[in-house]
Image (cartoon, rainbow, N blue to C red):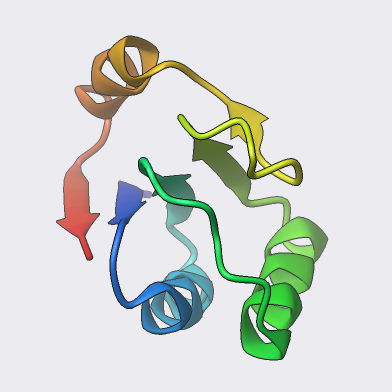
Length: 89
């Protein structure tokens, strides 16, 4: 089983959709929303609900993203070294 990290700054809905899709290969997928506030679109809300249902971890260094675990950027950087692949959007 691989550990995958998805870093999201731009193309939020596409990145969230792809993150949910990556769970189909039975790898561990964690999502990191960096610097920006996640747009409150219906598509994003649906993807976040799906992520919670499949126990995906979601992190952000922006405290405005209340549905995600807040981590300062230094802690995010330290976590990323444990992943097999890091995908940036």
